[in-house]
Length: 153
Ligand code: GDP
Ligand code: MG
Image (cartoon, rainbow, N blue to C red; front, top):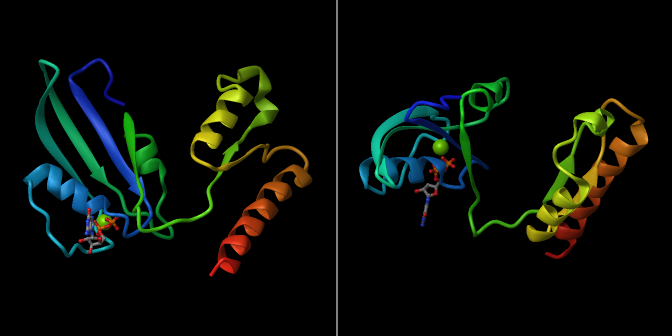
C-alpha cells in the first residue's frame, strides 16, 4: 500500500470481458477502443487532482489466468474497482471465511449478511480450517444456484 503519500493504487478486478481494459484505457486516454488483447495486464499512472489534492493514481488493469497469483494486486492495491457487465447475470455467494479465528473478527455476521442481502447474494460463514461439512455446504449451495440458473433457460 502507499498510504501516507499522495499516491493511490487501484486495481480493476472482475470477469474476463466485463470491460476492465476498456474502462482503464478510457480513463487514461479518454478514448473507447473496441478491441483489447484479452490477456493484457498492465499498470498505468495518471496525475490527478481530486478534492483539491494532487494525487498520483496508479491503475492496474488485471487479467487473471491460470498460474497467476492474485497476490500481485492484493498486496499492491489500496482499493479495488469490481467490474461486471450488466449484460451478464450469474449467481453470487458471499463467503465469510476463517471463522476459526473468531477472536480476530472485525466484520460481524450481520454486516456480512446485510452486504449479501444488498447484492441479492446467498451468504455463509465458514472455515477452511474446520470441519469439511461446513465447507461442502457452501460449494453445494453454489452448485445448486448455478443449476437453478441453468434450468431457467
Ligand atoms: P476485460 O476482459 O474486462 O478487460 O474486458 P475488455 O475491456 O477487453 O472488454 C471486452 C469487450 O467488451 C470488448 O470488446 C470491449 O470493447 C467491450 N466493452 C467494454 N466496455 C464496454 C462498454 O462500456 N460498452 C460496450 N458496448 N462495450 C464495451
Ligand atoms: Mg482486459
